[in-house]
Image (tube, rainbow, N blue to C red; front, side):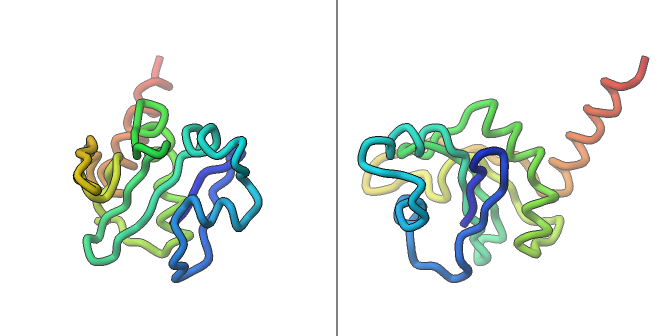
Length: 130
């Protein structure tokens, strides 16, 4: 479990049973007054070893937008290194499960760490050419 807070990648304690919300409370990052705002503005995610998949989202509703997609793409190599993942891990935006407690959520596959990273680097190189 991880989040991107104040521009920095932060990883939860290994093998924690806490949710993101519980982790944020334990760190003192949120209070009753700012919990909704913090959850809506903080990109977070989780790696599921059994699915060999990494998920990025924000908000109580596990939503994603272009900013989440862009941040995920830019952070993949750092997350791969910190979590010791391989390049064929699948990358998604949205929650790990599309149905949670009867509510359906949107989820989108971006590719593998390798394919998403290569695509980002290719776009960057193309923009630099005259």
